[in-house]
Length: 102
Image 1 (cartoon, one colour):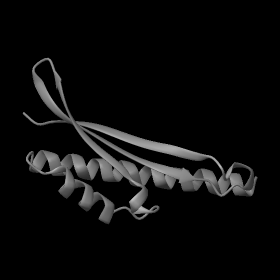
Image 2: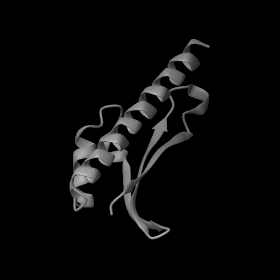
Image 3: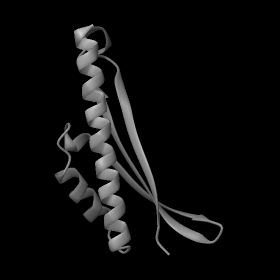
């Protein structure tokens, strides 16, 4: 039971870190709509401390809704659990933000 409690707390910590990165990316896009995906990805991976930054998947897509353009940011991280029974399974933690660009 104790291990499950620790895993739950660790999962919340990683999810919170991903949310922070998504908010940081949103601010970067709002300040500089011309920021490149590579620059954004590099900055976010440098600031990720809750796991292996190389495992992060960051995608930026364009979206148009009712004539308004958006950048859709998706950040995901495969989190491997420490629970011995579940070590073969990874949780996919995702955070998405849609940022208006025009």
